[in-house]
Image (cartoon, rainbow, N blue to C red):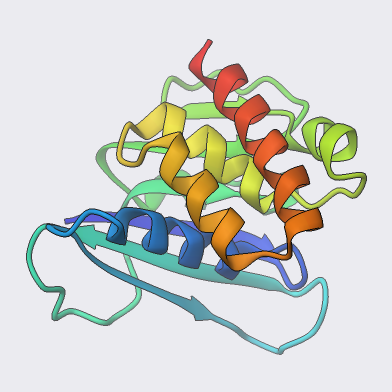
Length: 173
């Protein structure tokens, strides 16, 4: 089973990204997915976590992920050494930041810049989803685009699909 932890703040769309990843992976008939959030106080800006579990067999364990294959962080103020402690051996962090992090487990992308360019707002959830597709190889970019086009209003979907393509391209390089 592949387990992903999403770190964000209320209103950034971490759970939406976790759910979209699950839906994109579920397009494969041989896949089983589970996506769910974990909230503290439900308010805009409060730290939240969301989880996506991917497997080729039914998923019985519905508990939060303690050790992840991937940790995806939408807001770099949420990144710390604790984030690295939650990784399985060989795990990776995908971090939205302008900073360079000197750790081979950490992949960085300036999602805010891509979001501003394509979406017009600093919402980076789908951007990190596109970058995740490139870094992990667990889901095809086209499946993410398909799910976005099927679940979002057309005007918003078009912007997000352009942002996913840009993030995928940047992360693949």
